[in-house]
Image (cartoon, rainbow, N blue to C red; front, side, top):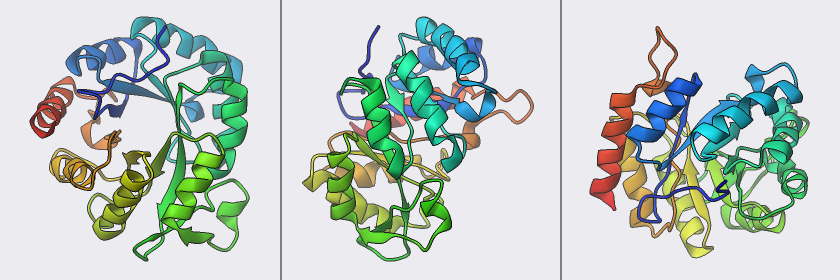
Length: 245
């Protein structure tokens, strides 16, 4: 069972939602394995139920799963950590304040654990108050490079920059990418990414020297009737990835 995500040419790995084991198999095949299949903790009633289900997914797609909060819900942080301890997935989504606890429970450094930081409205600064209590307090806004070093202190692997609103926060995003490149950190752009802006968003990260990018493409490629992530859209995304790298 692999704990390391499969990056295309060691540069890009997609992160998408899956609705069923069959959908996960199809998505994994369409992405030629360069994908993390998102399973949201919010969709399960208990840790035990989630662990049982996610272990089945793990066996089917070489453990290429991403344990998610569910729309960045800070109240899911502990459930995500406890699920991840048992499942040992390739990728975990976590709020800023939950990273140390999560890494400690995982007991290893190979699983990618991202840390959720948000746009602040000011280039070069980010909001780190994304935990269950801090998100209700006055915004904790600090320099992005300080935020990344704090993430590293806690055993984090990458910045999850959310919610981006697609290209609405382009200038802030570019500066976060510069900081990730300088500090040798993985970048995970998230929020409002679709087939129309995917290429530009990933290209910005690569232009700024980011070594590894994990773009999250969620509801924009989900079939509204079935809830499945569209296989044809995964193929389109992979073709863009191959063009960029």
